[in-house]
Image 1 (cartoon, rainbow, N blue to C red):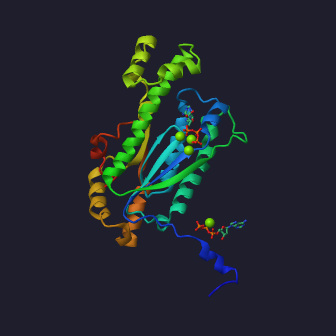
Image 2: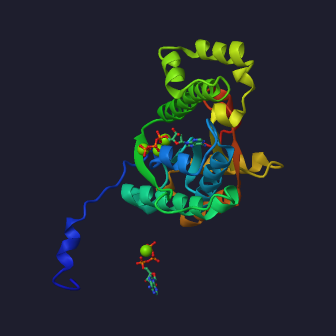
Image 3: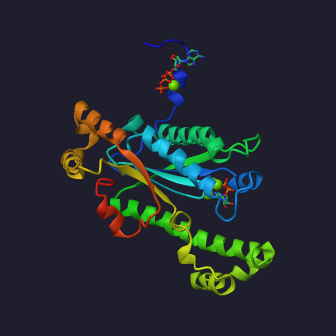
Length: 279
Ligand code: ATP
Ligand code: ATP
Ligand code: MG
Ligand code: MG
Ligand code: MG
Ligand code: MG
């Protein structure tokens, strides 16, 4: 029964469901953060406060959306991963992306003053983020996606660390440093840092070298109980789980603690030690 003669305009809306049983990655990225980081005087190459703020906002998103299994962040970007069984918003792409982006942005702005107490936000330099959803059809490819982001983090951080050391400690101009770094490989940059500035890149902070990975940690004292109960039943696609089962898992995930780690996620070890993350 139509409510009004205008009701037909609803038919112009295009459905945008994402394929079932595939990993959904929503990657968000800060808009114009190069300028924004200049305006608020982020420390170069890595402002720890800015990274902690990104992580704090991402942790709130994880707490808000129990369907997320893991998130990975570096610089002004974050990737949020939904389990293939997730039925959130009937897997509608725009709903998922806009909810992640706006929830993240809301927390980022809410928490800003905690991390930058003496640099209040000021229009027009207000933080905003774009986002997209990408589907990955197998766990192998999802892991390759995560590896891709972490390799990117490493490459950029080695470059930025060398560049800013040459500029800030070596008193070179931006152009001079850029020219000298053109065409160099990792070992060249490591050597510049070590020979000229006595910096061993390996000793740089893990958060800068590895980025940040967020996941749920279940009560440490009884990992077995939780693992077996989730493992046995979580293999059943969520659509086929009973409402009570679904509620039970949601509650477990909600209660779990979200931890922030700066570790290698390329090697198998991280995933083998925490099988619940992507099982
Ligand atoms: P776009 O809108 O296309 O994403 P952008 O200016 O945000 O443009 P990015 O490629 O996303 O460009 O790069 C983000 C930039 O933000 C970095 O190059 C760096 O200058 C700055 N930035 C982000 N996080 C930090 C941080 N923690 N410390 C210092 N600078 C940062
Ligand atoms: P969903 O997440 O599915 O959108 P919702 O609770 O936001 O759920 P909507 O259909 O979007 O549901 O309706 C928004 C509701 O918010 C309204 O029904 C009303 O209860 C409340 N609301 C929004 N704006 C106002 C307002 N200005 N004054 C009073 N109530 C408001
Ligand atoms: Mg961008
Ligand atoms: Mg950006
Ligand atoms: Mg970026
Ligand atoms: Mg609403």
